[in-house]
Every structure is written in structure tokens, then in C-alpha cells.
Image (cartoon, rainbow, N blue to C red; front, side, top):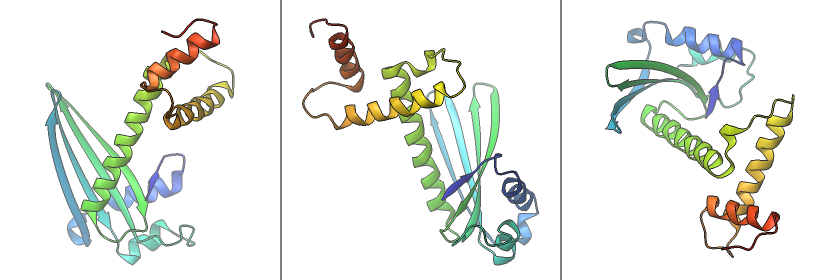
Length: 177
């Protein structure tokens, strides 16, 4: 399953156009989840199309091997009186299974959010003021490598943030606490 971004304009537009059609007349699978917590309500709706005519339309020339479905996940988030709606598109080798695709996207975003949180807390990534052309991307790669090394360490019994603080003290010639 791959997320389709606007950086792939033709594929993105073709999938968006397909899902803008009247889905009552198109065979598709549907699944929905609703979560409430942390002062918000989130509803996720997944629609999946596996009909060959529509797949051929978005996969003109057969660029995406094993394409078996296209999906749209719509996230509706309500916080207090404010509501936002966001749609994301996907291509997948999975057949018409909206429930499974929705669960897969949830796990992906959970992983992404967790990784971002660790990088921000442990490496203060959001505070970075680097403005050089490639420096931001290069530092992100280095931070990911460092995070992987710290996660694999079994000698020091500490959180990732604790291990970073310990390394910082050692680098600056201070005694660990």
C-alpha cells in the first residue's frame, strides 16, 4: 500500500477524480471507525475501488504492477466547535478490503506520529534552525541513524532521551550521573 501525494500530480488527480464520481453506481468497499478521546472526535471513512476499468484509468500504461485497488481515506476531526476534513489517497496490491486498508493506514500514521514525537523530544528536531539547502535533510538522516543505534543499545538502561542526555554529558567531558 502506497500513499499518493500531490508530488505525483497525474496519479493524484486521476484517483481524486475517480472518487469524486457517484460511488452509488460503482462497486466499492466501505469501512468507518469513530474514536473519541483527548477532547476530540475522529471519524475515518475508507472507500476502496477494485473494478478493472477504474484501475486501468488510474494506471494507464501499467506503471504500477500488481495494482489491485485504489483507496480514499477521509478523516473528519472535531475539536470543540471546530471541524476539519482531510482526504488521503492510496494505491494498493490488496483487493477490495476497506477494513484492512483503514487499519493499515491507522498503523502507518501511528508509527509516523510516534517517530516524530521521539525525534522532537530526544533530538529537539522542531527547534532546529538550520537553513542550508540540504542540511535539514542530512541532519534528519543522521538523527534517524542515531535513533536506530540508541534503540539497539542494550547496555544502558534508559529512555532514548536519557541516553541522549548521557551521550551529551560524555561528549562534553562531564561525569554521568
